[in-house]
Length: 282
Image (cartoon, rainbow, N blue to C red; front, side, top):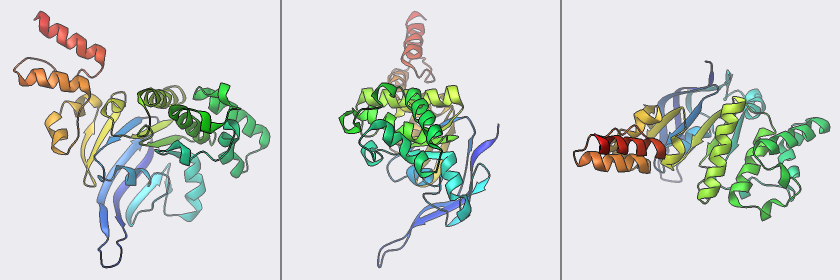
């Protein structure tokens, strides 16, 4: 499988204010994202996960090292537009991404600015809205929609640009449980059915359960990298950097601490229930 994003020896620092030193975020970070994969990046506030995500479509540029997006160096100015066509970003607050008073006009905004033919835009807008389950709302006013619906409109606006990768930077942080469910299900559908690479930045552990790969960051470094099962069974490691684990793992871990023989690798509610049933019957 080819790589969508390659980060090599990345260095990045925020400029300090007067009489305050620059703040170093990364000092030689290596990271890759395979095309077609679903990668969840976890970490406490300030660990660098959002800063890393913004390097994936050249919102931020390295102060050292290199970031390549589908073979294009983000430091090369001529690559800026092609990179942003390949990698779309969805942020926390959908209200900050909605620019029009009608849903379909909002979704059409980005391809119009790219100079896409109007007939092609019509096709892209309709397909994008259908993909996120919002086609029936195409003539609605975005401000009347729920938070989850607004975020799906923001995702549709990115899809209309026909990206190969979507980076979701804590897209459910401002949503209620139903809205979070809608957005995460949409991301998985895009990945599964259309081979769109998804990078999900989140602090909701349960949202990472369905990922192909979970990356845990702490203080600008990668602390752990593996499958959800491999990562979430490391309860003490995650707790040491202020992170929790899914509720299913918390329950199994509490029973395990009491001396019971249970696996911590059963992440879904169904698998967790089956593991407890096995234990009760043993």
